[in-house]
Each structure stands twice: as structure tokens, then as C-alpha cells.
Length: 281
Image 1 (cartoon, rainbow, N blue to C red):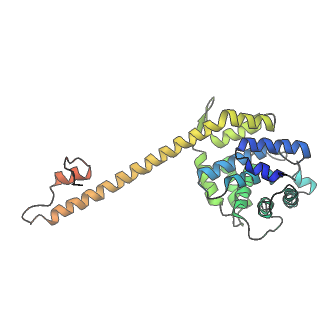
Image 2 (spheres, rainbow, N blue to C red):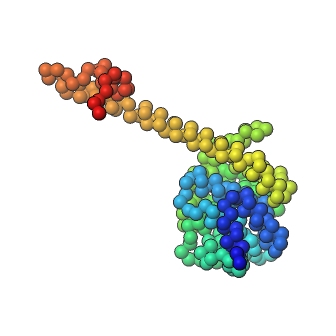
Image 3 (tube, one colour):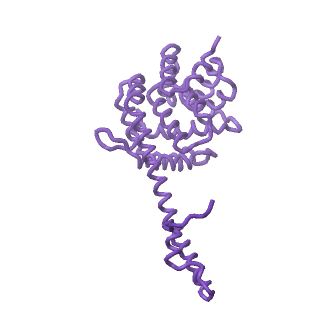
């Protein structure tokens, strides 16, 4: 008989994977709130936009489940240091293998697990950052800029997280990419606004999948295309002058020969592909 682990890992669509986790949480009472949806979306964007070499399906499944034994007020109840390990132990009973459970346990460092998995570092940096940009009972949300500073200079300052620098670069780039809604707004700010506005997990999943996933992907594509064009134009501008200078130097070096190799005019035409002559095949 198929176990839950096989069932959810075989589902590759993130929205459907979220719904599966939502119904599981209703059935057995594991922790699953709107913040988990936001974390999974940010993790997905991070992996895809920065082209990180990991199993995306594995990481996103772990992101949805690694907080399964968390409580609403983990710090007050004393569960902060134990929920990740307890969650990993529980996930093992659902059929997940040892490595998957280890990845989930390492969402934080309280269990002092050794030889951390690289996927765990993605969970950690996304989990920490998302927690900072959302409101809590004891404090208001930090701005994106403030969250990055806290992430680098306090929360993960003395860790060996593999992806902290890359994640900071990713967030800064994402802040420059906007999507058109009622007004132009950066992608991360829009995700936070949706988290705060939507009434519950199901409506947030529906709104993201039906209205905003395509908009976000289109904005990312346009931005990457623009970046690529700028890089190509920069290379063209940078490389043309040195090549022209080399050609002119070649002309000068041959000025005392019976016949110059190239004139300045021909050199310019060759470099700009304006010559009518073609090489024989």
C-alpha cells in the first residue's frame, strides 16, 4: 500500500502539494499555516531564479512539512528547541526516508545535527528570512532590508550556511522586480501582502495559483531577458574598441610593406560585418 511520503513526493505541482499538506493538517493536527505557504513560494523562487543544483521537489516538500510539530507560541511553550527533531521523528512514521527526515530536522540547529545537508541550508535561510518579514504577536514585521541585515549580522552570522550570500543577492534582485496589480509592487512585498490579506490557507493557495503564479513567472522572465540583453550590449561595447585598435595596429605595423594588409575603412567594415565578400566554404 502506498504511504503518505510516496504520495506527496510523487505530486510535482506545488499548489497541489500544498493542498495535500493542508488536508493532512486538518486530519491529524500538524502545524500548517499561511506562513508555510509563503516560505514554500520563496524557496521555489530562490531555487529556480538562482538555478540552484538541488532536487526542487524534495526541498519544497520538506519546506511544507519541516515545521509540522511547531506550535503557535513555540518560544513561550518551550517547544522552540525540540519541534524540528520531533517533527523529523514524526515524518519517519509517514514513510519518509532517513535523509529526508534529517533535512527537515536541520531547518534549525537546536538538535546539533552534524554534516548538514545542503537542502537544509535552503530551509534554514528561507525559514529565518520569512519569519522576519511577517508580523508576530510580540513585534511588527521587519522591512526586507532590515530582515537581510538581521539575517546576516545576527541570526546566521556564526553559521556555515552555504546559501546565505546567494540568498541575500536573490532577495535584493527580487526587490527590483515588480508585478503589475492595482499598482506596481515588488514580488516579495506582494507575497507578504497576500499572506496578510487572505483569510486562510486555502484562499491563499487558490489566490497564488489562480492569479499570481503566472504574473510572477512572467515578471521574472522579462527581468532575466533584460539582464541578458544588457550583458550582451555591455560585452559588445567593451569588446569592439579593443578589436578595432588591434586592427589599426596591424595596419600600422604593415605600413612599410608593398601593400597594406587592411585600410582603416576595410578594418571597420570587417569588424562590423559590412563586407560583401564571403569566405569560400
